[in-house]
Length: 292
Image (cartoon, rainbow, N blue to C red; front, side, top):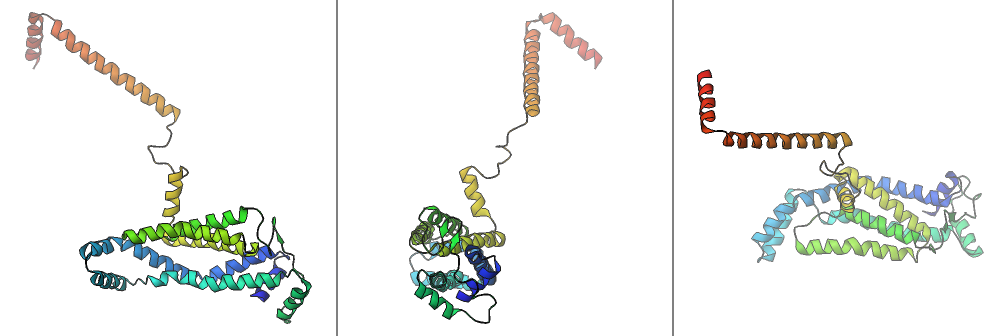
């Protein structure tokens, strides 16, 4: 991993932050088949919620039967609940390896710089020429935690959006409560980690989360995100919410005025007929009958 980061550093104009972004994109690209499989599995689990709820109501008092029937439904529909955790489990060793790689690639002492030279492959082009590596990216030192709250907030928000996109509705109240807890616990936990870990690792988390959100949106749809935007008032408005043009308002007002005038004329006509003498009304009716 150290040699990969240094090689990307030589390609991307000696910018270690961009090298981490490129490294993250390569990792996520390699994980696309697994991520797509996870997304489809989550979508199928969401579609099965009505059946699972029916089974829970039918076997509420028999836990063993409930477990058996639930696993049968999963098996018949090709759903593996544990398989949904695949990408998350795989990324844990990547996080640990990247943490160690950043610590060794951006040495803070001459002794660590000598140790970095011993880890580099001699056959890679220009790797020894770029040492020591510039650890500045934007406003942060990639080897140190961000002294501002910007990185922790970005990590927390991107992690929350990732959880929002990947968490499917559950018919089980306990599972729904667990999902709600994880929706907030994971972003808070990773946001706290960002205050103590190198900023380079925070860059990896942010980019990885954004790529994961995009993949999830294209595979299973953007419904969770669009629902969130509508709830916050930023989503597309429905026909009833759209403002009408001024011409439409004028026409509508004219139509309303015309209708009211017609109703008034009709009422006055009926009132006038009632006030006419009976003989006049009889002659008018007779005249109408003769015309028929």
